[in-house]
Length: 98
Image (cartoon, rainbow, N blue to C red; front, side):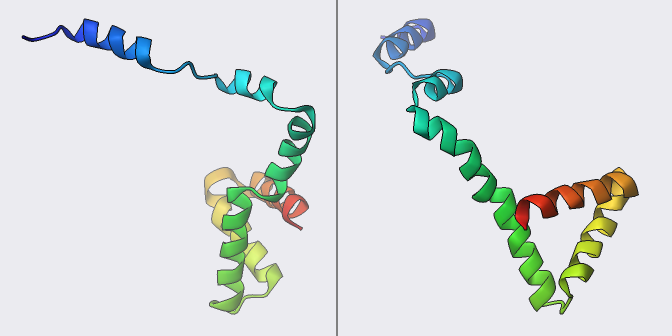
């Protein structure tokens, strides 16, 4: 016998465990963890790891100096966002990653 999809969905919803939203999960974290996570995200972010890897490739495989690699990044980004915003973004990245 075929069971209507609506009944299956209701039954599945009744059996599924309650989950927290991102906000609820953040509120339930212990205080030390709430204080340390934002700092840890700055130092251990995926973006920072990708930038570090790209810098290593530019320096080792393309034989660029650090300054040449930085200027290469500014020039590459310049076409998308303009020279001033590209330079500002690079300065922000250097402030975080250095």
